[in-house]
Image (cartoon, rainbow, N blue to C red; front, side):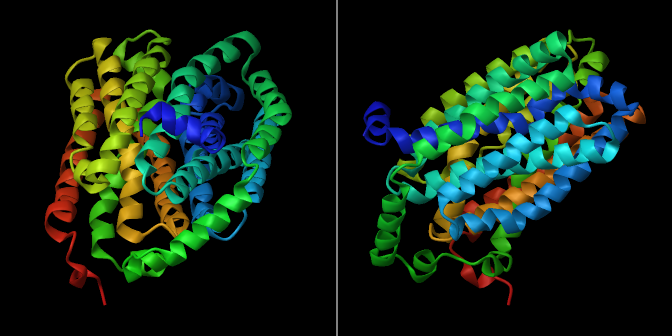
Length: 413
């Protein structure tokens, strides 16, 4: 089935996955980045201090994700989505009215939990769970929402901040979401009850292995040695890219780049990610996710090397464009990978763990890089360190894919 026929056969539910990823942009680092200097000045914060606040809020959200994310396995998707949308709107309003450090942290927390955490989690989990034969295509189609957000939100934030100031920008965002978001999402989920009941019947009747049929619990996952070998690679992109994006204005100053360069380069990042995601979807369905995931960090590593060796403006386009390749192939392959390994029934619990750790990684990076910049670290130094870590983590992924995939005796007892 080609993409057009696939979309026309499932328009509303695919649109749900798409729109959840698009609106997650309000809680993503690339939407915060253009506001960072204005917020720092309003609260008289250093790079390390605002990074610490953002990190603490994201870390708390990541810890809550461990519990909240797995509720998607038990709670009706419509209720789950409604609560996420309310949290996102509350975060935008909190951001616009923040007048102290605690209220600023609360705003960060609500936005990170809903946007970066639960909206992405709900989209990818629902696409992976309810599409079996076309899982890769479904994730690819939905991920276009993420690509579109990455292309538009940084420029939108820059324009709104310049035109209205950061408080009014967040206030208008909250008003817009209040009017549009919840009605749209509930409309897109009309008929979901029947879809879920059919999924439960199919899952119970399918002839899968015992572990696939029941789904692996979080306890079993945390005893699987393969999980720990995959862990460093799964955390690299959230940690590294979040740090550079959050401090993008300081990176621009150090590299002597125009302030508008990186928001524009995000268009290349999003475009490359979208094209790669469209290519990756059918490949996941045809050859499986694990064969693709083994090589997926290499483009991102090449982007870090480009950022390390030159401060020319082309480095911004290269590091974001090559990051887009890793993201584009990684979204369908990464989401399907965990489903292939642990089964679809409890994929929400599995993804909740990965999303939680991913958020903890993004929690650490703004603070760690902020302190590094305060101590005088160069962009080149941080990029070289990132490239080395990416290469090391890729070796561990190869061990899982090519050596340990079919060796369950490696589980801890």
